[in-house]
Length: 296
Image (cartoon, rainbow, N blue to C red; front, side, top):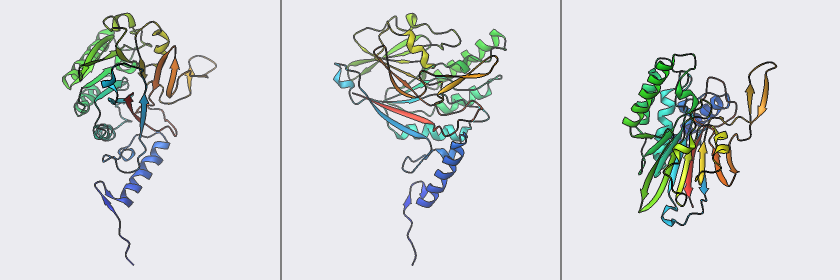
């Protein structure tokens, strides 16, 4: 007897399963492939959409229910393809969110700037009701061996390109969104590792009695925000790794205080996103992540 196969917008159920197995197998080994993402959002996928209720204890009740998508560490490069990242952005657009935030490391070791240009064309596809906002990661500043003038030129060119694509880049700056008459502040800081982390400048205009969400790349930056008005802090950088290598001899691993998920730090909520891309090294059995916060 002939067995009917239910059809979906992405193809047959059998094809969807095969695509998922390809994505999961390669993803487990640390590869970022287009098979990791179901562009229609209806079938199994290796990329993980993590839904979180973010309780900020705010009197601004009209902010309750606002949905914020958070992505980090795209690392557009030879090891993270355009097809994969394009599908990730299509997946974000399916979530129908109010705001998108990005927390750095958009490229990897991009000496000539070609991946920065390709990145800009991809980010232009992001959709949200109240815009997209980004901070910078350590890789975005360029390789330290390059002349300072070249690094600054590449960085400024990427920032201007992102802004032309509709992404508001906040480098030790803040901006306020008007959501049904209620303010929501987004604060973006420079990267801690490269010495561009200036919270006094970033929070200068942020009222202490209004809701603010801080974007940082390195989660350790939260330890420097004790005296600043951030209700929540979102970050990336770790790729979900519980330990990091230390330079010098002997070569050792040091356990990270913050590696993935939600933490409570000095009265602030910190979330560490596992990221979408990779830095050339494998990320064994660590699923790429799109986080969706719902404000409560």
